[in-house]
Length: 560
Image (cartoon, rainbow, N blue to C red; front, side):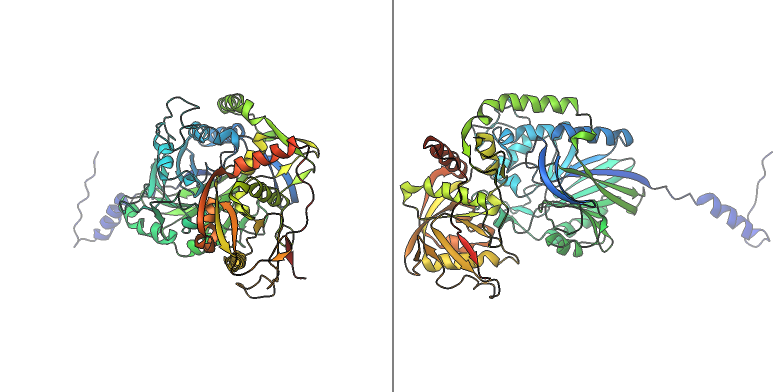
């Protein structure tokens, strides 16, 4: 029996009719769905596990983490919990890589990430180390390369990365358009997740001028904010900024919702549109899961030591994220059964690289040559490399070598009086950066040294033997080098005298905020790379029966 209810607004039951009608039209709000985003940053081509000191809740310890076989196994395990997880990158997955990757133009690294199911990555600065054209080749595939001796030598027909790169603020100055897409939208579990990429605003200071030719970077926050209306029009349900910009914190890597984050990423985060739900960062090689206000900001260290897992509760049908949690998961090989496919890939790379990598070059006399600065800013590894660059460019009558610490990518730590291989030396100087000789006056050299504090912290240049100066931290920035202390072989450096200086191309182009380098005259490309100089120097010393790492006189002093 059907009952027909007639609703007459003048009848006594009108209000009941309205209530029934409203109840039948109102639907239950959709329940949030859980979206898992797993991120990696600053892998730098590290296919194998590698050691690093980390401060955790239980104190500092040296941990050997990472490796593609372990990272693949971690993702396998996480996918048993959520087959729809989204694996992304936050830049510098390639570039500055160990020899085992760089010998092959990082193509095995991109093959590994594709095998892990990466869906998108933001660009970083080191992704562009070989220039715009080569980066685009690495993304899209092909063999026409600025590095023909490396490209397509691992696989005969390199197919490309297999996933897109994004950057909202990286502009091709030839066209005025973005070099890469600004964002990537992934639909999963009935919701749309938008990832918006960004490179560091100061790209011209962290990429050599030749590699960054034809490009410019704009403000990260403004570029991200500019695409928000477009994303809203496309009906996205969550927005995640994936920027290769970072910060640091004194808190241990496993601190949940850390609150002491500082650095460039904080400034950017504070200026982001409120529609941005989370920030996945990189660049500073730190590991954190912090909050700036209500915004979650994460980073997964470096070299594949961690994966960051973000869990978002996303409401279908609207842009509404009800909750976000984050954690950094250590890539500890002891905790996972290696992924078989990636283990096989690694073994193939090792086998095909082995003869070159294991070639003995010389010997080391001490157990450790590293990048650890003493109080004055001098490092034992920096001393070795600057001495190598000075010695191997004597045909150009060089007198002083300068080196930025960022050009040193790995320490030499092993038993004293043991062999050094090509692989170990390559890990120290993986960029194959050309060495450039030019002339600077004594006045310009002093100005250059005073620029070491111009970026808010001390970024000490490493200097070759025979050169010495003293600095006073109590003096104002811009005048901390003690007058009369700058000496070459014990004699004062004269303000108007020209000195033959060698540096890598990055510094010669004024990188690292050291613009005085660009004022040099009689500039010459030596045709020698930093790696070639280091290998030749170590080999030459070995042929003379000399092990590297001998103690030398202090080169930099600090006023007590």
